[in-house]
Image (cartoon, rainbow, N blue to C red; front, side, top):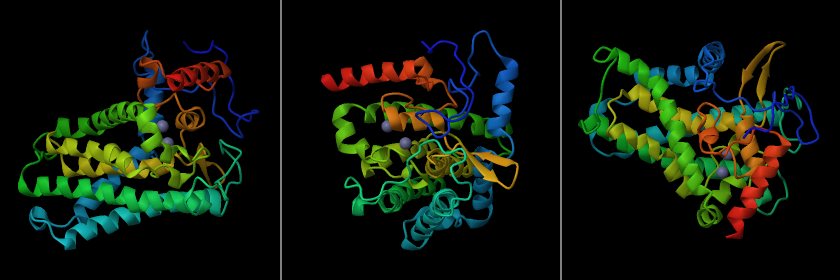
Length: 333
Ligand SMILES: [Zn+2]
Ligand SMILES: [Zn+2]
């Protein structure tokens, strides 16, 4: 179902200011026949140092070790610790999204290098609050997003504090403890894929998901800019910790992988150029294609859900044509 074997080297095209090597790469983990070297390389570039997951795991560990209020305090609801959680989430979200925004769009530190879309943030566009994409995206992300995130945080922390949520430690279950850092992102992408497909059912799309899709040319704040109902669905994965034996570090890790990673995956740039040589992979061309063509790439490249369920857009004109056909079909009903 891919559009032939034509390879297109990373660079500029009529449609994109910058695109990675095409067709879009997805994890080779499930390839048949197996591709062990490619799979190893994929995991090394996706998991080892400087990658986001590691950053989130370290942050989760540090926050648990030094910042989280004592569990006894969180047995009962009180404004003190709840507002502390809310403030911390707000600060982290702002640090990530605004940091990337300033670097890439405010100070334009790397010009248009590795920027996918030629357009920037929309101004004087009536679909946005105050006709301004930036302020609109910030408002949805902070007012609705951080609040919903904190709401789930409160439930799960109270679960840990009161013993409703099953807690393990590294010492009690070392293998499960480590395995969860690999399994949880798989679960996360599965949850996101199906939720996202439901959000694209025309009736729900119009009322809910359209808010996220107003940002066609995405930027860091666009990622967490969603309708409140979508935030409730998107962050609901956190409730898994009420039944899945895990450690609070895993719970924090997934919170960051949901909320903060939306800023990097919507950066609109493939890489962050730091200094002369250092590149840090940020944006996702896979999801950028979703924002341009809609009915494709509901998941991410880390799990081949789209390939398995027939919604993959590999970046080729043939795939674009196929997706347009799907869209006509969906909306003619
Ligand atoms: Zn969508
Ligand atoms: Zn998006």
